[in-house]
Amino acid sequence: MRFNRIWTLLGAGAMTAALITPQPSAAEAPADMPKADTAPTPVPTTPVPTTPAPTTPAPTTPVPTTSARTTPAPVASEPVPVDTAPVDCSAVKCVALTFDDGPGIYTPKLLTLLERQHARATFFVVGYNTRRYPKVLRRIVGDGFELGTHTQSHPDLRWLPPSRVRAQIRGPIDDIVAAGQPAVTLLRPPYGATNAKVTKVARKLGLAQILWSVDPQDWAVHNSRRVAGRILSHVSRGSIILVHDIHPTTVGAMPKVIKTLQKRGFHLVTVSQLLGPKLEPGRKYFRQ
Image (cartoon, rainbow, N blue to C red; front, side, top):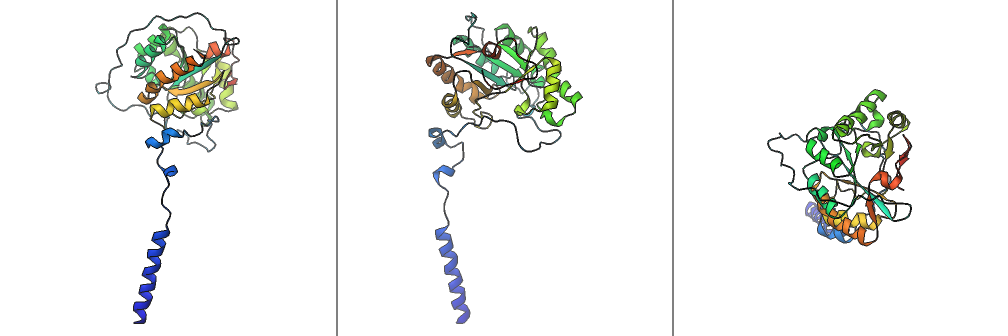
């Protein structure tokens, strides 16, 4: 009898604990649930990681491992004539759209959209994609857009010796020049991670370091509506916006982003148009 009484008390306690265990609230729902569209999360503006990275970190977007046969072909689209008249960003409101990690299969569709909306942009390309999509690379230059280097394979440059930092930065540059851009003056360090060593190499190569002031984290949030909402909630005159043209959801967000910014009176320009053509090599730029 005494044993049964103890067992009964223990069982009752467990049931009581189960009844009072808190359940996840709607605010704790996964970020990709539709409800999150109504409350975009704050956009960080300090992109540099604070924890040491491994010696050979994986790139933000891994090098595709599928064969060329299984890779979808780039979207067929024809260049659209655009007004290339210079814009004085000291006199009018300007922002710079910048696209990282391409070129890719969605880039032609994006280029056509930008051209139809008379918008300019800057593409920071990686070497493992400039060799895969040389025609897209040539079109970016031919259509009047701007290119910068985003390294060969997207490592955290802070953890590499100077010789490898230089080799990584130079990786896509020959391809960019071969595509028709006469000079490369812009570097975007992967992850926005830079230090005195990276700055010294960039200075010797004549490259300004272009970071950003608006980051919707489109690489993590594969939802066009949320990406557009985050950009439009944080953009202001002189902003440099970071997005990635390798994600279809990002390209899908651009019609709303571009049209809304233009309705607000913004001119969408290249980084060099926004900041001026004479940028200081090695210097870090976050916005106008």
